Image (cartoon, rainbow, N blue to C red; front, top):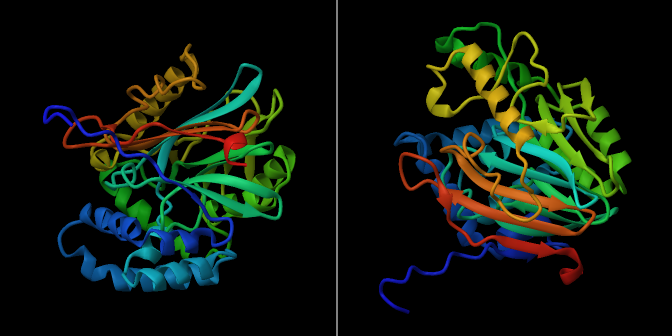
Amino acid sequence: MDALTPPPAPVIPVVDLRDGGPVGHVRLDPVRARGLRDDCLAFFPRGAAMLMPSCDALTRRWLRRSASPYTDDVAAMAEALGVSGVWVLNGSYQWACTAIAREEGGAPWLARTLDWPFPGLGRRVSVARLAGPAGDFFSVTWPGFAGVLTATAPGRFAACINQAPMRRRTRHPWLRLWDMTANALEAWSIRHMPPDHLLRLVFETAPDFGEARRLLKTTPVSRPVIYTLVGVAPGERCVIERTEEHAAVRLGDTIAANDWWPARPAWEARMPADELFSRSFDHAAEMNRVRQTLVASFDGTVSTSFDWVLPPVLNPYTRISVAMSPATGVLRVLGWEADGPGLPRPVTAMREVLADAVA
């Protein structure tokens, strides 16, 4: 290779975990799992690693008291890796993102980005082929993660998670940390299943779009969440906005950012971490409205390229972009990372998985 020719972009691995599940993922690729853990810890101030054992203990206690059927998976992954932080990362439901469900070529498609300030999520992403009583599905995930954030079950449905807006008792930017702490303390006593664990359960057990929608709508969850869901037939698409025990289902305007649509009083749209103490309540809501409006007006296609990943959908914390259609069996994934200040760039080759090719 010529010295001036850049090396080829890394290929996102596709791993068959139908026998070993997420625990098998860690055992299959412990280097990738430990690297992701180290990357995430690097985001925190120096010395944070010393607090991980205590934070792990708190998260472990909370998860074991919850209704999650996957707590033993997290325990097995933590034991297999032999490092602290596994419980914390599996308990950090803090993902922000944008999603759109639309129909192209007569088939429903679901496109989403996942945004989070942790480095390494784009570089170390994998596609895992998993199985449950209802059939196989493909999860866009990482070794060491037990839940499901983005997945497709060819012939059944596809779904993803967006972080819900934050419950606010105040409106001042400087008091957001107080509200975040109060919300966390409230969640401590809740025994319901984490939202990402519920989504995994749905992929394992739901035979079709209708049952997936029912489970995501009616099963209590430990934290507010937004699910975007598509099926295989025209018209099978919806956004399910959840609080812990209640749900609102949108059949039209199937676009989700990190706010309720329409916005509700006392709930604040999520915002970039670096603006947590500066962006106003109203500015956060306006930026989310702009994002949703731009996505709604996008006149290209999500089924053929990632041209829709543009600002403000693309932001400094974008880590993955995904487009998937359970009707056609197509899943496409691209990893993103930021080298420094500014917008991230693709750091992997675009990975396409075709269900018929791997069946």
